[in-house]
Image (cartoon, rainbow, N blue to C red; front, side):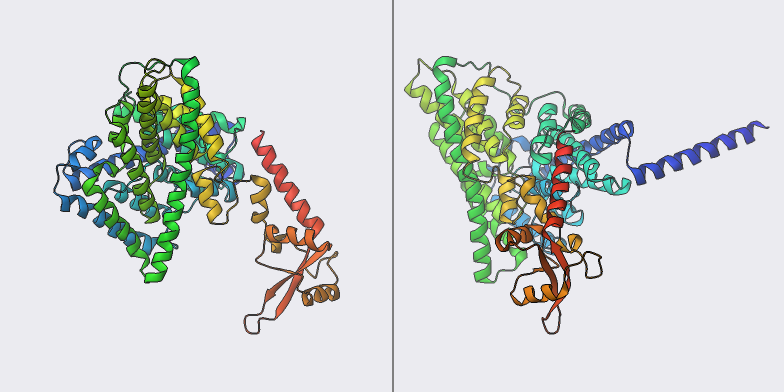
Length: 560
């Protein structure tokens, strides 16, 4: 056999093996070793996407504002003509309005809440067309003075990457959610140079469990995202604190408890301000007959007018956050900037402009903590440490309460600042703030958003799993061997005791409990006469079996 024939035969064998392996991967899902490599690839892709999104924001800000260092945008905006500061957010709002009008079905920008919903209800998948449009909207918003954060769009971009991979490989729900967690962890790590917090954020906020089978690949992906960040920006922290911070532990801990309570209330006020502003915006839009695409433009006008006098509300606010963490603000400045940031964030989110809430909550928390610290150290100068330590604790406390993520937020504060010596103070404040906020809202801003859309994830799988089962998929048809008696079904329909084919077990099970019947007729309406047409019957025992199987599968995933 010639060398050419030998080479050709082995190439054909290799090609055939690769083809079989690809078919096996597509139809039966990845094995453990394969999955780790896929998780690494997804993490690298999500990490690069996060970095490119951040760089794209900086490039557009540079082009629009003419600034050399985007990190000093607030102070630079003070030197610009007022009409320039006013015009840029308006231009951004108009552009965002056009995009959401034509490319999203409901005029709403996708963010972290949609990723959480995709993980819980859609096998780890999120929307793609609306997601791409949302990424564009958030990029424009954050570049043109919108007062929100970049973590929300980055998380959703990463989720789209994971969804694409999951669909290509045709993986099941568990694997799809794991890939989603890998992508989110890498994106958060790449955005903030925070590998530990990135991994825990994916588990605590998005997947909402700490299953061991998901932990290792998520950590691998998170590490990949961090490496990408450090190769791009160097091994530096987002914020630099002045010198060292110390705590007079025995005397100051009660003060940090009080700060935690205050931060929890501030977090609740921030979240409710966003929801109230959104309701006002919707009602005003309805009364005025305002086109959907003009809503972000109106928000841009309000933001521009506010930025003329207080440019500190522009963008993610890292410059102002740094001023708070270094103690370079007066008490009244910290209070005013915190209030105005809440207002600006509410306008941005209610205007459907895009962006996230994490970076703004860091800024609001740092300002709140600094104001509290300046007052506390002024009243008790001999029994307290630095006011900047209160700013650090306040930053973590407000952000943790807004995100509903005390573990990952505590760690991300340490990783953002590089200060691991003040852990007890931050943990005390974070624990108190999340305890307060979780009792006044649906656990977090994201879960509260979903609750407002009638997606009940805050109560756990025992609540939202019912909405995943349509009665048409569980019912017995009239042709089944153990079908319900048709005469009895028609009698129950006359008594208005039935469910529609479009109903879910969330509707059916309470009706079973109330009526005490063994089955419910399932109907659909005739389009011409609206006459009910019997499609089958939903038996109580079948509904409970389907629900129990789903609960068992969820428990098995969360404890595997």
